[in-house]
Amino acid sequence: MNKNKVRLVDVATKAGVSKSTASQFLNGRFDFMSLDTRLRLQKAVEELNYVPNNIARSLKTNKTRTLGVIVRDIASYYTSQAIRGMDDYCKKHGYDLFIYNSDFDPATEKSALTTLCQLNVDGVIIASCGNNAKLIEDISNNTVPVVQFQLEHDDCDTGIVVADYKRSSFEATEYLIELGHKNICFVTQQFETVKSRHEKYQGFVDAHNKHNLPVKEELILHWSRTKGLAASPVELLKSELAPTAFFTQQIAITVDVLKALEQANINIPGDVSLLGFEEIPMAEFFRVPVTVVRQQPYEIGSEAASMLLNKIKSGKAFNTRTLVPCELVLRESCSTAKSTIQL
Image (cartoon, rainbow, N blue to C red; front, side, top):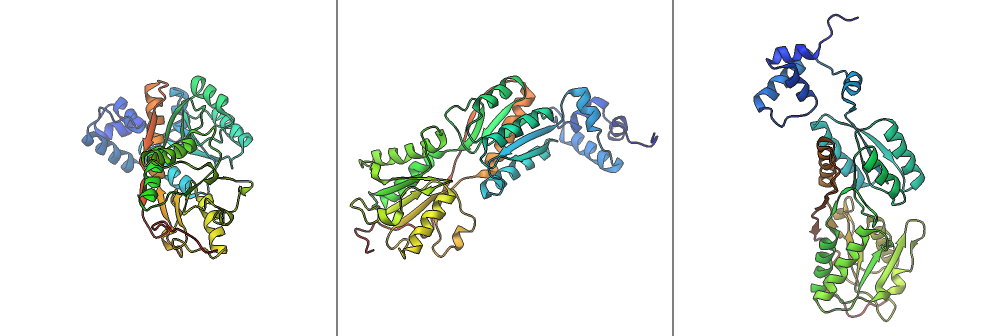
């Protein structure tokens, strides 16, 4: 046995505080602790090179000070920024993260949820595929707290942090309408069972209603990850209801529409305008910098972590819905509506 091993009582003695206060500091509980006390404890920890025995601590408190995070696409810009927000917040409060990537697969997501419960994490943050609602609800009610983020499904029954999709879509659509666009093509994934996507659509509808414009069903263009665009944007531009602007609802959709238009030598914004929901990394450096609705994934991640830690601390299963505002970033892909397009 190492008789020189630094103990919790050594940290407390050096900082001039009780063992209980030192324990609260190491567990990230600073609510009733002065800044001076925190600084003295931090200095004592650093000078003594104290490393907490997390295994012993978890056995005593039944807390591992670990959280599970499940995302759909770990490589995406949005996800990486959200994880960074979670990690930064959790580090400040003495928590570590286990991160799992579901790759949009419900079975992988289910396996990750099961594994995280077996690892005895203190809580879970998840961007769900939408097919494990009952399992997520059971875990939230009976095992550990759960907070969802990024996408809200109709059957979501936990706390959640998402962008203010409805307001942001309304503002983006109104911007296009005020540029003179009356035929706006709304390009989206299916939104019948996904509340977040439906709220984007509702914002689109509300802006039309405010300006006494009809929403034309022929200009609702669907997209899926497996099949891409349901119809060609170029062919739409040849129709009687040719759109003067495309409003795309996700990065991959924006890229597909942009690619189709550029391959057909359709000028943006000279022939048609393009506005995307969600920031595209380095979009300002595109041949035509794209106007976008920019979300705040870092803030969403940080807020999701904060909500989860509050749930853990309080022991209450409150299901708060937090909306984080977006920003309309004006670049060069939108202009006043054109009456005709020569194809």
